[in-house]
Image (cartoon, rainbow, N blue to C red; front, side, top):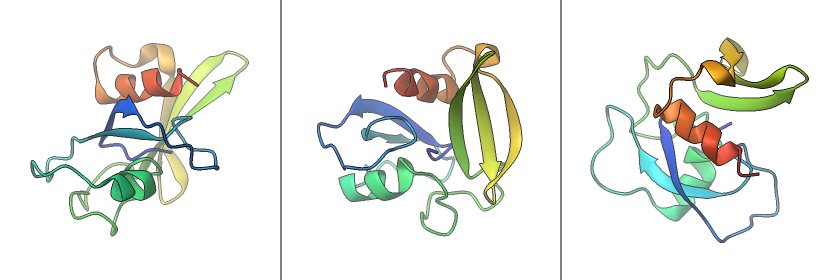
Length: 114
C-alpha cells in the first residue's frame, strides 16, 4: 500500500528484498496539501511514501485524510483499487473507473509495471 499522496515518478534501482505495494521501490513527489517544496529523502520515500500509513509518521500527512494507504489487487474480474484507513477498506472499485491523469491513476500505472 502506498501513501495516497505519493506520486511515483521514477523506479529506483535499489531492490529492497521485500515486496512493495507498487511492485518496486519508487522515488517521487509528495502531493499532500501540507507538503512543502523540499524533496523527501530516499529513506523517507522507502519507509513511508512507498508503504503508506504515514499518519503520525510524516509531517505532510493531513490528519483529516480520508485514507491512509492505497492498494491494488488483481481479481478474476480485473484490477481493483482499495483505499484503506486504520487497516480497513473505506473505498474500492474497479481500476477501469479511475479517472485518467489522477494521482491514483499514476499509482496504478506504477503498479502495472510489475
